[in-house]
Length: 126
Image 1 (spheres, rainbow, N blue to C red):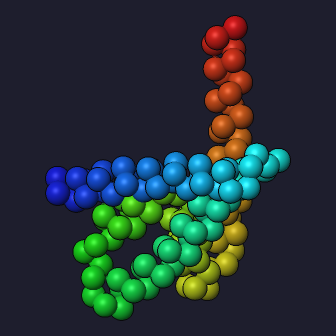
Image 2 (cartoon, one colour; image 1 turned 180 degrees about the vertical axis):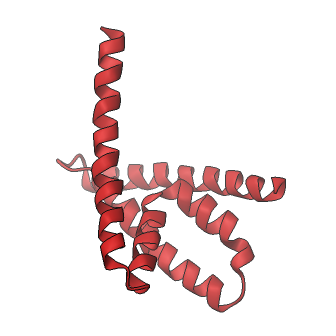
């Protein structure tokens, strides 16, 4: 258990550094934009790599690498890749209604949570 937690932690540090550097690279390449293209880039790349990675690891019997590579590195790079994988898994199982509910709840309720957090902290700091 402790070894798995360490794998996730080390992978997460690598992924978070990769996310930061990717964001800087996109900013330098494209300059400031009206929408956060660095985040969009990381989410798309991370989701693509997650799909390829879990397929490869599953077919090659290497799922013991999931904690370090998928949860750690890709989770640190972008949690959106995990969200995309979980959504696709529900769709593949034929549970499209659940997938749609998951998407709406994840995005909608998370946004509501963020807005509530902003308002509560503004109230606390006022």
